[in-house]
Image (cartoon, rainbow, N blue to C red; front, side, top):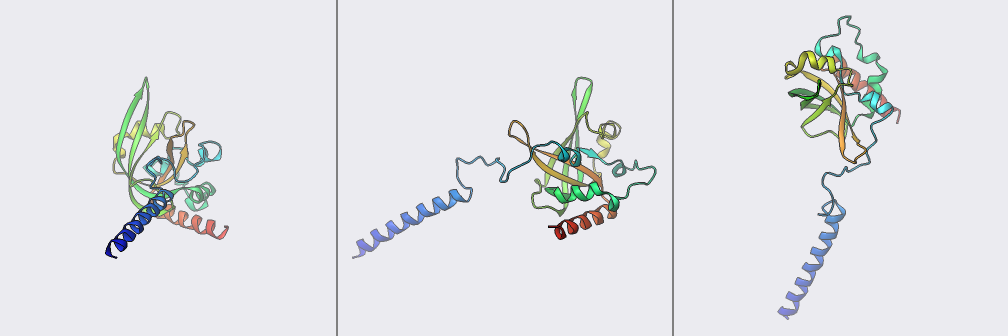
Length: 195
């Protein structure tokens, strides 16, 4: 009788293992699945999205708002950007890398997340973004370069799919100020009310 119970237990264990294997593959544990594949459909970087996530640093973020005309609470673009961002983060610049392509340079900023303000799809705690020669902030980068290390910003980030299928993050960096954080909070609340 013991051998019948033992055989039954072994059969039950095999069935349980098979069930767990099927469950694991349905939960994304399938070894054939690409771990770098996006877990959600991503938009292409075009149209309005390229205006909202324009790979720029607002001049006020580096102290260049000489006419003090920056009013985030009254900015409808900030509101829209906040509502469609994958995440809104307080970040600090950890590295600045300059890469030359002939006479022109593009810059890679290493960003360290300090605090998540909003969003359900933040990038990793440390991530990189690129400012190339077509960015309005190319001049800021030429003048500041490595002096930006340590600068704090509020980063609006969104992930997009490239034509080759890879993913890339586009961004907009605003001043890390009480006014920006308050405007972000208002925009998120307004977005929730309008849903």
